[in-house]
Length: 268
Image (cartoon, rainbow, N blue to C red; front, side, top):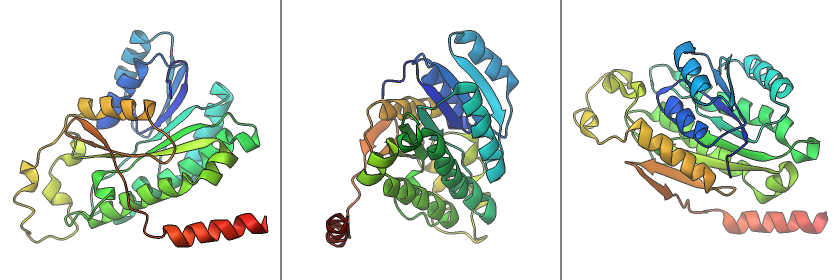
């Protein structure tokens, strides 16, 4: 996607990765940018508005854990911006002691935002189509013993997003779906990591987790924007230590699914 003159909504834009991503997005000369976040940061918002006067930039306070908040924010944005080209669902939680919050922020919020966005973006409903990018994690691609709750929520995001990338959904909605999986990134989410595990006893991983290399939020943001620009429907990207790699996930059920789709096509 060429981002010039595009209208973008970013969930979690005042977070560690989110702030850097917005700074990178604004360099692309967007038409409009709406930041949906429960947090507020008037100082950086004013700085962006000053640096990029040709882009309409505003903040809407949204609690990602409340579906009604998400619905209201999209409704207000549609009235103000008319349409959306790109949605980035970037809110996140890393604290396995907060089980409900982890699931609500990392998964349910993404699901609600995605489905509500489709109501406005779907070409079958008069929308213009576009791209929905859901930010998962490297722990959404493999097991993570220290944070199984977070891993479960992020793995669900990965599978949810890939599922919606089915060709028949693209044909119906005119919306592409892309999954982004950052590796460990230097943000406040990683502060005091060993106090956020689900179990309170020491494991061999506890002693090494603080020594694992991390990428900067700037590198992650730069590659996230680059991945979006070069993405196609169904892509899964891992952003690790300043590099982008496309993830090829094996299809373990291809034959049965192909047979099912063939039967459906013959019936229709």
